[in-house]
Amino acid sequence: MNKLCVITVTILMGACCNNQSVENDRRHDVFPKGELMVNNPNFTGDAWLEMFVTKADSTDCTVGNVTFAPGVRNSWHSHPGGQILLCTSGEGRYQEKGKPVQVLKPGDVVKIAPDVVHWHGAAPDKEFTHVAIGTQVSKGPARWYEPVTDEEYYNK
Image (cartoon, rainbow, N blue to C red; front, side, top):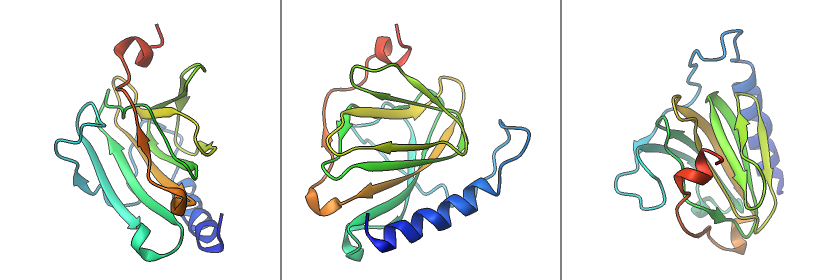
């Protein structure tokens, strides 16, 4: 990870983690929710995105705040350069192909190695927000695969 990405992660973790409270379900928005991603075929419903760092910024990383409505998840996908998720509010889900679903809470950090097929999204009954950091984006864009089935989502 380049120096700017390390600095960004450090700043974001400080901002996010200092905002935790004893009441985990209470929402503390540190960053803007962003714009609704309308008709995005890689999401099962409403999700919002606020980009902080884009590929055009020449940092070899992207940084964006993603909020999922309850029950919403993205399709199976992978990143040639890897990805880091910094969970900031609500309750989420994360799964790598062939592994069990993981519950995500504020303060959790998910480090996804390059080319690992995975999905992430909100819990069935709670909104979920994370900061997504795309690392080594010069290696190429995310590769999108099939949608996550209800059976996979509910870990049946």
